[in-house]
Image 1: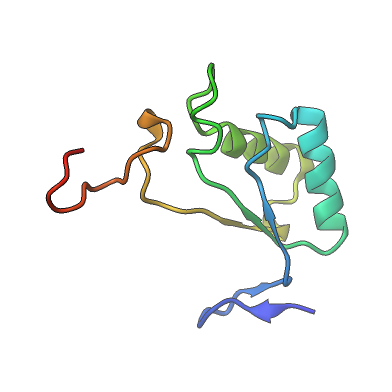
Image 2: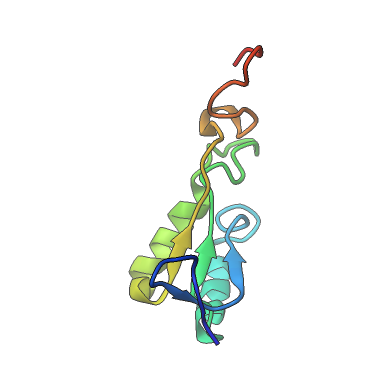
Length: 107
């Protein structure tokens, strides 16, 4: 059963897949297998953010999005899923700082 997303005309399944492990603790094969199984099971929305794993040595952020993008291209399932994301963190600082400093605080 799908549910309307907010006031939009978009319809989504009730479970959203978090993509934070893709390209980090889940390699390409594992990531693709999870994504394939999710869609095969009726999943319709993947959540991600470009700060996932940015704090890991050797990572810069965006690893999850890169993996999801590669899967979308290889699988041909771009029209089968919606991608959700968030804003408000600086990817260059390992996602540790708000995008805009709070009043009275430095960056």
